[in-house]
Image (cartoon, rainbow, N blue to C red; front, side, top):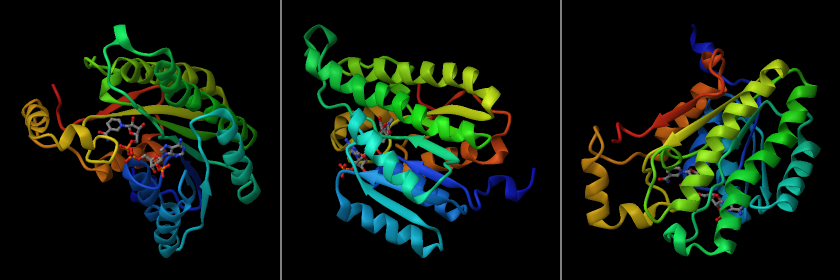
Length: 253
Ligand SMILES: NC(=O)c1ccc[n+]([C@@H]2O[C@H](COP(=O)([O-])OP(=O)(O)OC[C@H]3O[C@@H](n4cnc5c(N)ncnc54)[C@H](OP(=O)(O)O)[C@@H]3O)[C@@H](O)[C@H]2O)c1
């Protein structure tokens, strides 16, 4: 193993939901490792800031305003990606939502459907589009951002946890099926990471201290600490890793 096995020089990486949080950290980490990027979110101004930083590392970046929570947005995002890049090497399915906490017995059907459409079907649809391009070009790499909640149940987070458990199995089945096309597929399950998405969890002192006490490292994680695992999975350093679900939790119990 050499340092170049952790480099992504000249590769094209697509990261969904990448104007802030974990997606942004992954996009910047990949750019520093040599990749050219396509990034998306629903607000162009924040995306442009990320694109500017990526270009400052000497990489290309295509920022696209798109709602990738549903099929039409996913398709129009990739249509734009393919106008700029003929080949995708890496896809990071990162966009996930958890719009409403409720016990499953009271979860509205519309909330369940939205969570499943974005978190699970969205990952499938994006992987199909990117995967066909990767297959046509001799291989590629798909990384699904899942959650510790996909392994460990959380009361009130049922639809989210079930969608992420689905992402873990989607990862395993796709890896089995895509290995013959030289495409690796893996998932990352972060614990609590300091982002907007999880603000409600870490801003509440009682909740924060519960989380911290249940973690070996006695702290929550930062988005860049998930990006390190994503870089390992995207690079050749992980050439024998596929169908695996890797945890980044600081030792959560
Ligand atoms: N943070 C945690 O503690 C944690 C733990 C485990 C797993 N995760 C997973 O990590 C992933 C990223 O979460 P995060 O914490 O980084 O979230 P975040 O900080 O809220 O960032 C979400 C990103 O996605 C964009 N986005 C939201 N809805 C979108 C849509 N419909 N279409 C396109 N872009 C959209 C947001 O920009 P706009 O709002 O401008 O569109 C933003 O760039 C999710 O899959 C989540 O389940 C997070």
